Length: 178
Image 1 (cartoon, rainbow, N blue to C red):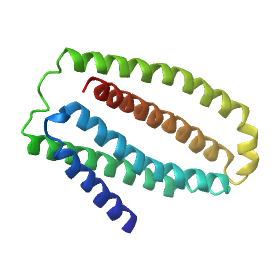
Image 2 (cartoon, rainbow, N blue to C red; image 1 turned 30 degrees about the vertical axis):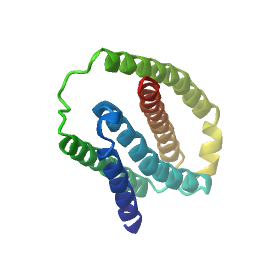
Image 3 (cartoon, rainbow, N blue to C red; image 1 turned 90 degrees about the vertical axis):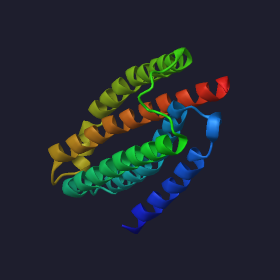
Image 4 (cartoon, rainbow, N blue to C red; image 1 turned 120 degrees about the horizontal axis):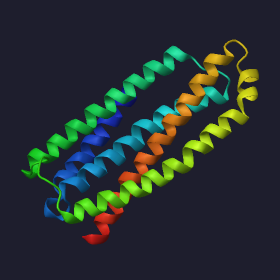
């Protein structure tokens, strides 16, 4: 529980820093920063716990599910809360339509993200299929459940990496035009 407090305080500090960037960042760039930083902190922790346990041959499905729910809820709460706080502090509307530059940046970032997704999904799928026997022998108590949990977390990790790259691409493109 103390780890989550440290994460919350750290992200609150980052939110305060983003609130006071003034006109130097658009709202969409600020939300990209929030998404990247929150995702890095929370999901790195989640995958660290999961893969450490998996490599030690200890997968507790219920504990992993609970950790996933906690990380997902924490991630959503922090992203929403910080984004709302930034919008209120900067007195800008999140509902404002994107301008032409923001649409171009979004399109380029989406293109990079989708290409990466098209690359990583087959790699995870083929890698999982090639290692299915190794997973079954490593977890003799529940080979089917362990295989499913590892596969699901592999695909979840792909989604998180793709989103990090997509949001990071937006940040880089926003900074290049600043």
